[in-house]
Image (cartoon, rainbow, N blue to C red):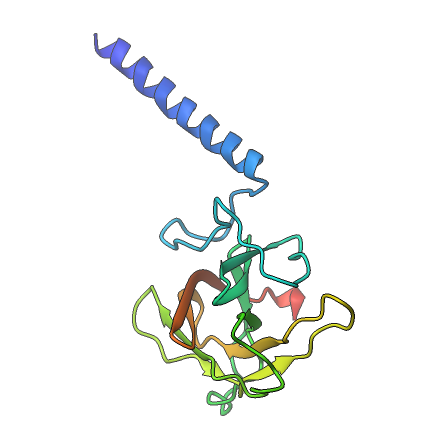
Length: 188
């Protein structure tokens, strides 16, 4: 009876692993190496959101949010990070990432410096706060699909690890989780 239980258990584990592999292949998303299981990074939603008058997301990207506040997420769930040089710890540069945000309530002509608040918290424990460049905007592209512009945030994450990033604009909040890992020496 013990052997039968062991065979059933091994079969169940193998079937579960195969089902997870098939799920990743069907969704077009592959498991990420280097992101620990303890970091619940944000993945593409089951029902994708498509912002009004925006271009398609990049190959490693997906839209996240609603008409009131959206951004582009990374399918890999990874941002690259490099430390500050000694004596430059309070500077935003080098940027970890630039994040574009959109809202049907945003119009760059009326609000050239968006009243967008970006916060972040380390999910791994205590860490200093994010460093941010002053909020700015990206002008809409020309043509019939030109939009009201995009809010742009330059962000420096102070430590590697698992981070929850939250944007807040006109009472709407949107959060996502990323894994921030040091830049490999060859990529600098």
